[in-house]
Image 1 (cartoon, rainbow, N blue to C red):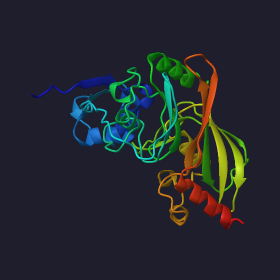
Image 2 (tube, helix red, strand yellow):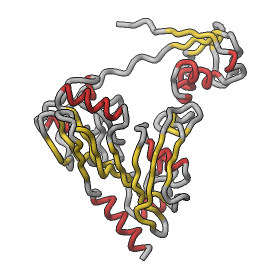
Image 3 (cartoon, rainbow, N blue to C red):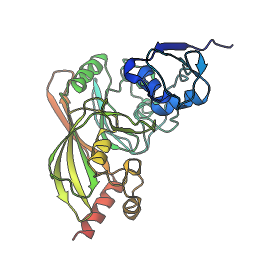
Image 4 (spheres, one colour):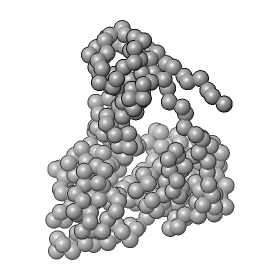
Length: 313
């Protein structure tokens, strides 16, 4: 059965006078610059009634019409065992896990690999039904390429309580990151807004119109080619540590997406960013007591760390 496409039309604000069509669409309709360009290339953009290309220029007051893309197909949770996922703590309200690398927190369009939600379902865990269907119980996330501690809500009260804590920055999230070079200063704070990368949908970047993002870091150990940092997040943006360290000119070792040296990654036998969630603290949703959990480095990160340490001896 065919469906009628949704058309949205807005007048171009005077402040966007002279901007490219793709840039104007991104600002006015909330798409990434890449998606906006794709819509224009597909003939789904009109400017004052005439088809517009991505590089055409807009004028203030002109009507910009966009045929909105179809919503993504709903994703479903597949109960599938997750190799290497460790259960650190389990009670009636929460389950704390160590997420292995290569595992997503929950299903999403385009992701066909294992998920924390699917792994818990396969292990017989019943989790909170709060939240979107594909991410029930998930109160925070780690990148697919980042390993470490996560807490998942099993009860409805836990979901509400934990979401509040993460939103109000009550939790203590600590990461260790091996970054290239030596930050100056060796301990400090990076306060820079993060938003969608203007050219690449899969990346994020420090942008003037991004959301406030604050990362605190302290030196743990310095090596000839890299530095091991203890990192505390004040905010929780997607890819925050990776983006901030890259913008600071010290990308996480192995993070080729954000400018890491591929030669160093190959020498250390790393196929992902050296980044691990080592500690997680929060108020337990049952009684408010402070609980804290820790996690050791997985084998690939430990090997890379021992190699750079040996090379610096």
